[in-house]
Length: 160
Image (cartoon, rainbow, N blue to C red):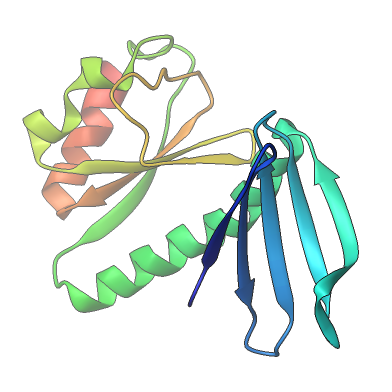
């Protein structure tokens, strides 16, 4: 997919692409942090049919809704391609030792070889969280690795 990026002096950046059906869609990222979802007229690609202004929370929600299924699709494709690779969804119970602590404290990759590829919190997906990401009780951690390494991650997250 070709995504065009255009600098908008004094405003921010515009990213646009054309769907398979020929519709032109854009996102304008303002310097203020606001984002506009723009749907262009199919007969005049320079004229917007609809513009939806999104605040940070709305833009994050839309990104999560669009991104979460893609993560699952990519994981499923990876499972088909790599024999012995599994993914697990592990809950972070409120009483576990890592609640309120950064993910890096668990040293999951170093200790097991498995990778935490996402954390789901309240319906929101945090893809590829960094070591400073702080766990909350009720989070669901998505781990990828061998059956043994993902099982070891489950033990670490539950008991330390």
